[in-house]
Image (cartoon, rainbow, N blue to C red; front, side, top):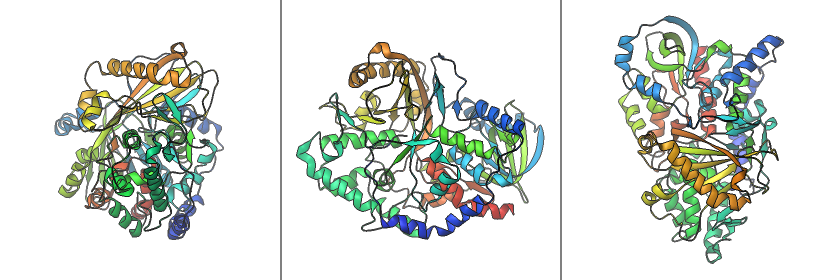
Length: 565
């Protein structure tokens, strides 16, 4: 999702240490690079792959100019209906066919796509329950402008970490653009470009300076290694556990030596809602620092992170037959037998099919894996139950013309009486916390798209969001906020608005809550099952970032390759 206005990138000894310590990992990736995908000479295959991406890829470019008034995003009716009543479902179904494959990946979001790319030489079967691949890194198109309906951008990966090698292998620099400097913050109807210096509350400049200095020290590893998540070595993991003893709110209070200034408190809270759908008072400081202290240059694609997912899918299709990539197919059971793993899934026609495989990667949320995995251990179930998953909405406002201001992301902290003091009160009164220029990577003066993020930073939101009338209710809320707070800010008029499209994500964000990293929960979540079932997903580290799944796919690839010979 969204992140803070970035500070100037600071070089540190961590760059050198990571490049040295991860030399083996870089060599591993370079070894894979020696067998990089070769461009097919068969033009018909290229056309077929292009058709597949257009029909099943992460960005839906088939939508008309006007679409029905309903949510895009999650549709969990089928998984809930089947997985909640799995014994009855299996008793009523018979297996239509059985096939064999070296490896099966369940889940076609970013984690599944990166895993399929890393294991492409084995021609994996990739099962995805949605009609399109990409998970919550999906996008849509309007009048030729692609915009994200979920995850919006990534940080430029640092040299020496797995994501950096993937970034170069996949040629992501070709399809992503940078942002020109820091973005402003809205306060009381005005934009402030130097918020981090205490511009809106100069009486607290010393507190702002202390926090900035602390984040710089963390970035430069002044006292201990950076608490990188996923941790790549024991020293990083030790640092993760050190910062995990505080919530972000507790840590900031400790750093500045007292109560957090009102505007800073509000912005930190809104930022955490937008990024994690969680409060500063429940987030582990270790997880929060991965954004606040590590932020440098960001990279934005046309369609947000859906453009990255699309590039990965395109590269996978160069070596993996499109018949092995199966959208609208729901994994229902994974069972480890004596000499193979049996995977049952319902295909797009509703038929139950079976795959016998040597290895399974569950690139789906762990609470879903718990329903599918036969014989799951009590310890893993206990760890999964400690995870919280949160919901959020995005509203995409389509304009006849693009905003003239030079920004990518604006946080709106409201007026003098808009401080967040009680999360329970804010559940009812808050609207979108921030908005981005969704078509930032492909500007068009004749049209523009703004995407607004509205998180639900508390448990139990999903049942509320499934009630009748929710779409109309929240569309009305967005319309009021846009008319009152945004149009005057951007010098746009109501007549410039063409439409508002909305997306709902139900269990999209695993919360990196305080204590999860130091109590052994992460170890239990990452542990392979009976040496043949692996878990590669952002919630394996309880950290909502596409780099989580990408990194895990590299860290576990060697073990999987050994199984596959």
